[in-house]
Length: 135
Image (cartoon, rainbow, N blue to C red; front, top):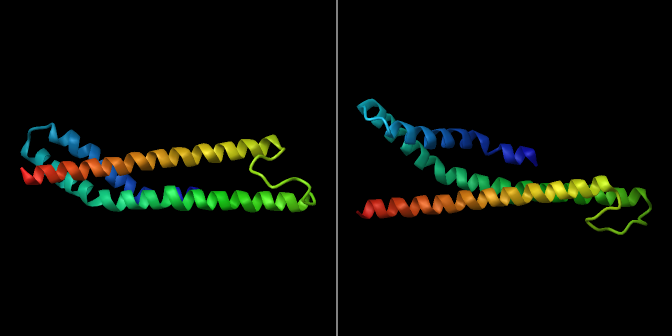
């Protein structure tokens, strides 16, 4: 599941750098800084949609699905080893298993929250750009 999360890094790093650096450079009033700021802003704009889609795909669908499937297989094998006398549920009698399930739930929840923030940020960004183009 971590692999799916890390697939977003090749886009996240330049996307984040372009976003922050373009803001910092736009505060300077030299021609070179403003030109570089415009270039970085174009880079940020061009990476925003692919990064948003990749992030949602990896962090909302692939990683949680892979993790939940892995837990299901792991828990099913645990039940088979014990003779199936432990009922199949997501709360195992073992404290460690309960801890793992809790961590997975928290991780998935945080990923979904981040994805929500990225998607709403992208929607606001697009709306702002549309109003700027109309003016």
